[in-house]
Length: 628
Image (cartoon, rainbow, N blue to C red; front, side, top):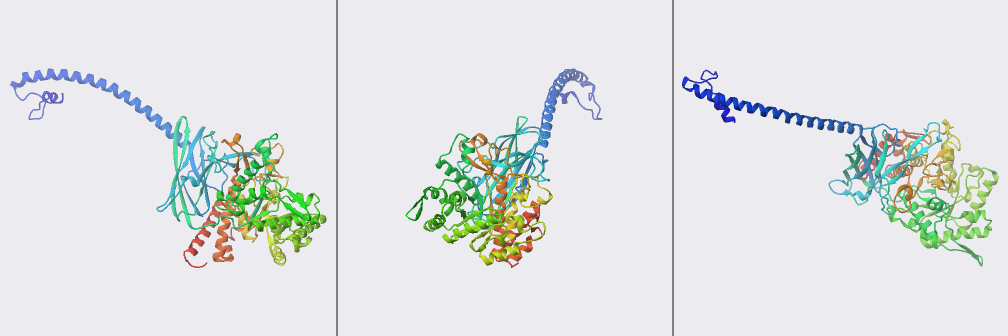
């Protein structure tokens, strides 16, 4: 057709249309008629083409609308990263952060949070981290655990600045670390205008090389029937040193195995001794991974027999329960206890056992530990928080009985009132933190140091409901103390080991980690308000399959426990730096931010910067750098 059109439109030499000469007129007319027919055909084709183009334009317009809608939906959906020392509540607005920078030593856990929020309902389907790699080695996915942060609704505030409502606390794993069962953390529906966060922990093995590791986390989300994938970037600096598997800071956090039957089998059920022991071991594994030691245990007593002036204990059940934690627990990266308690003291002190049998009882404990070659310290708390003259006298008598039996067991007393005790028989003096350096600017640490040196005492301390107000809403005087409460900022849960190092205390005591399991009809998943604080005495949740999915019972850790672990990891940096540079050099680094028991930085960024500076000091010295 193109050739025919060219023939039909000859050009004169002057450039005008028409025949070149008269002889060509007939041919020209013929060609004009042919062209007329062709032009008619073309016009018809153009009309048809216009119709097709119109349909294509409609399709393109529809596609553009869909794309614009998808872009709008994409814009309404926010997925971002945060550091771990933040509690991200449901009303937290969307942020923009697609890359996070972490650092950790060998043997340390690093952690991050992923949050999602949209103006419409959505469903988080999967969260998939890749291996973290550098040029020499990799940290595999099996070293990472993904959790969903579950919320608990507070009704009573812990103090006057703690808002009531939903707080993130329990951490439900996608796949648990005990039985490797899939739990119901994901998929998870998120309401409109609701911020839901997820926790990822990364363990740095001792076998990988130091370096800069890179990886990603893919977040798959279904929204409006479509699946979106957001890819976030993780950067981890692995430092050229390691922290020990067993914490350098001894601790004893209380645990009572008796209520486990109540929550894991109901009021009409009962765990067998074997089941109770196994479940207690799982809680101990979780605690050791969080760098703390549990005391109390399952509560299964050792049968005692008194005959011919000698006390005999059947240690079979006790040994079976505690042996992994005495010698190094493989499931907790080889960590072990540094201190543990003498158990069943109610049988000794409250059942009117004669003094001779009491002495025999404590000697049996010391003898058994020597026989097993367990290099774990023993302590016994004779009287907790004595207040009256009779209670102080009773504490003295019980300490004397223990000392008469053996020097391998350290009698402990929880008080600041050293002048009311006969301290020669005690081994551990453990005051509450508020009494060591209170709001009245009276720092008793120097006095405690003199007393400890004179009587060869170890100094521990503990926090209590005095940090928030006991059975009352904490007033202004209760603000600023370290706290293990749910509705306090995460840094409050983390700061205790920093203060422990600064005040040269040698251990931490905490009265309970599962008291919420035994509070009558209270469901610890819904109510942990005890002694005026949300979460007081309860750091675990019961991991029932009816709540978290799967088939078997497990302990569920809280964000607060993760913060305690982070603080105990921080302590290793302080401990190592002071060993390399001297205590005064480290104090010069932290004193401006960690001033006293009730005056310390509330900024996670500042705390992170302090830890980074300590890390660089350690790295420089280990590489042979300058002092100071």
